[in-house]
Image (cartoon, rainbow, N blue to C red; front, side, top):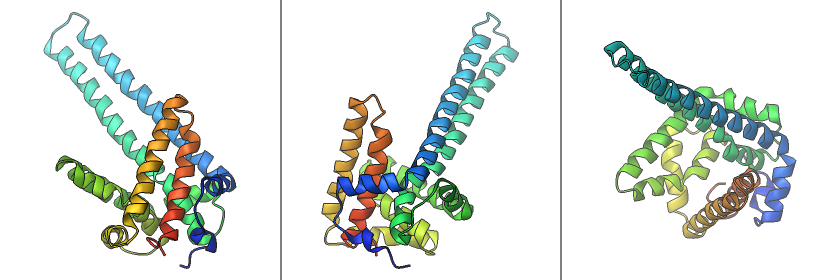
Length: 232
């Protein structure tokens, strides 16, 4: 697939904002789902958490009561894990929307975003689990390897959503695309700076600024990846 000429233009915050506005329907739809899942995760977790406290604090220390409290906590933790996976599954679209937009040159609509995500459900879920596992293992190994893996995320998402590369090959080629590129440190610098700006914006606006800063940074980073030849 030949990417849109727009993908190779010099990235700027103004251009990234215009691109977010053009794809506002898709961005808003995915953001809405993420907010809903976050709220549901909070409600479900604390429902079972306080439920376990009520059961265990009733003065009855029988084995049945203890088991009921433990079961409530386990259900709460399990629900939280499942909802976290659901959240991550949808969250990838924040990077996949700009990846698809630059690859095709076509605006991604709200319905289009969901078609893209669920169109190759198995591929996207498997790719996400692989990346999460690799990042988790890397983080456990003195943290640095996890960062090394994490920095390939925008490239990996692009390859998964816009190419037919097998998942493992896409994972391996993402490393080659980033760390074999002469402009790798410039791109890494952009990623780190974008992350810092998102965090700063979120802190200064009680989190609301992240609703704008995250998608803008996602478009900017994808544009930079194309511009510097990490993605073709």
